[in-house]
Image (cartoon, each protein chain N blue to C red):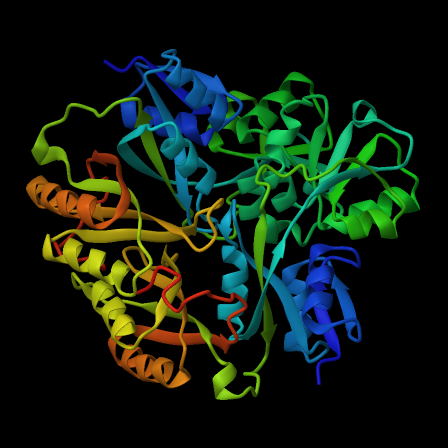
Length: 285
Length: 285
């Protein structure tokens, strides 16, 4: 039974929204100022799960979060997609021309960079969390300062929205994952997606061979990313997500990959949060 | 003849260092406050080339720069690797405990995040450029403020280094590319690497098939990254780098890929800046 769910950020943050959409309202959302701290809470048994952003449309994969999952041997047990709309908000009765500083999370600042080109007088400042800035503006009644945060944050902290959906990309989807210490006990038929990591030896064609095996086992790739191994020049790791209709297909592929690839690791098996119209409605391995 | 080279940042920045290492000192380095502005200068004929960071060990690919190259139909004509060492610097005769604010480029802040965990009193603030902060501290004689920048910046702007190599990863390599409006006229035997982009149709095994062709044509993959197409859910683009010993092998593969993949595009052909000990000293497609 999931009770304590750790998030980066405070109530009103996008992680809070995802937690409620995924688990409903009957959980205890635990606020942390970093992903590292949220993971610490999981590892030390103070939390049952962590909700963590993993990919977005502009920056791609959030690699430090992959490293947290990998280095702590955590398990991805679920995923959730949220269309993130960033709004500029401040204390009531101000206009955007009154704003001198905007504080927000680095990713939110990056996603809204273009909007602020028209307002060169505004200084953009990194902060820990989108909603926490909204809270601080309200608590300290800060004028001339704005936050970039969610509708929920504006509502919770009585701020006025000066500009809606200021992110560059209108359909701004972020993929979140649910991370736990151990595999979730779910029925095989519910398992339709897996996240994998592996390294390959240095022979030509080794990646093609691995993808051929996945394809032969009827796995569909939904993500692939190579990453140079930091302390080992010329070696590369791969992060791969696959979807499948039947977990026995995946188990067969995993057994083969474990033999073929170095340091093969299943980061998690879980239910695909995407609904496909047809089985081939995707590019595949 | 290359004369005007556009960089993000000012003299003393890592892009400046790369420009000189790549072209020597007899070029005119043009300073810009964003990659967009540097590319604008290239597109409007005011610059002959742009030096642009494209990948680093922590954040992976810098996807907005891939988008700039792709959307403006620019050509990658060369690459250069720099081991980036970030130093914390301020006006002389201060200690780290005197510092209240650190301004730097978002990527530098990200790479040094762990170091600042031990100094929670220091506020981290995003700025446009690493070296420009160092210059400003010197120009305005700002106390209690520090920059994260290069040795060259400390030297140019008379700052004292309070802590050396504060980035999390000791060997912190960044890959830069040289970008131009048109293909460089270089001899075929000098072309040993290519950057590609393509999309695939939605049939299982399509990526494996493409990698098989690359492998058959004796191309080695050094990077692969899938990216959801922002405005087209369920469609994915791939960014792939390949190296090869003989450009005729690449030309053969390119002709096949142009038929097999949608929107196949060569982002550039150039000389591989890596020296391999053996031909197979890499993972390969």
